[in-house]
Image 1 (cartoon, rainbow, N blue to C red):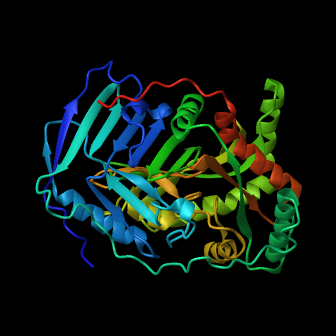
Image 2: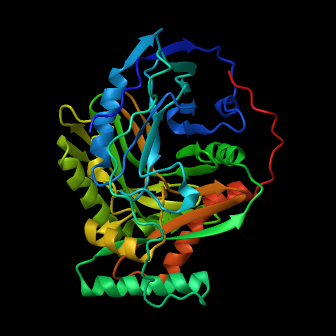
Image 3: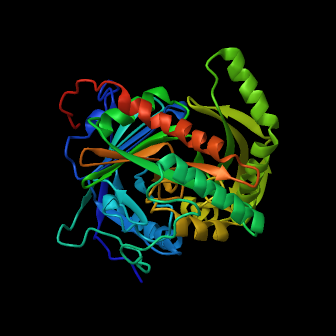
Length: 440
């Protein structure tokens, strides 16, 4: 199916004064229907998108291939004026190939990237504004990839062994982990990542929450994707893929330990994590998975030694990879090969995905991906972790843990609690007084 043409799209690029705006979050007016924000302070990049000049949606097992083809067609319609950075598609995708049926995820299908009407890009100390308009307003303004089969509404899910409505959330989840360990013992499943969620009322706003995440987690990709009444906010330590000039970077991130309260204790925990057999074994599944996936889309792949990375709430084992993409491939092609890695799914992949679909409520965009890309397939996709969904005065948080044959269920639950602290800290701090946002 060929995507619908929106007519000629004109992108006008201009360099903004260095002191305006001081915080790109203030570019977004309150109440805008569609907006996207990304920040990675460590690499000095910040992106804000408002409105929809065109969009790409795709569902089903071929969603990445359809989206890549639609992106090429869409970028082919662009007429550029002025100098500056390339226009970007911004957005993300869900964990599953099918669109979520939970109404909380309305506006966030299996994959959605938008070309914003206004896009601010701050990099290298400069801030650019890219305005995109349709030169023929009467034409359609949307690119849609072919939809896949919808999931039946209200799909029934089999509870994990030992769980029950009368059990507390902690007891039910721990019982579920025991069921997963039993499934691993009987094969062929070797690892599964089980996630849990919790919902609570909140007076925090998505804007103030992502601001705190960005300011306190410079090493992470902080994000805010808003469509309609839903705002998806988080600060991910894990980059699924970063593509620059045909080179791809990806990191296997799995195996964790909580941070210590004192410096000496902190250093000891990092050293213990590096030699822990359970965590090394869990990490090996992810490293093997990333290595294999990159091998399918790269001419060559280089692997660096395993290391420990520190984040505000935890240490993680990391193995960095770098490769050269095959000619003609880009970021979405890499995502198709990599997602979902064993860091958020399990091994073997299909067995783990089947079990997750059977025993968990819908993940929506949790453990999916968020990010940006340009016409040449360059860009960054972060795994949607340390995140929450805001809707109608409530926020739902997610966290998961990798379960292997020697996992301790109570310890795995504690790990999910530690991971949720990233969002809880941002939500619990007093709300700053915010003036009305001023768009540039």
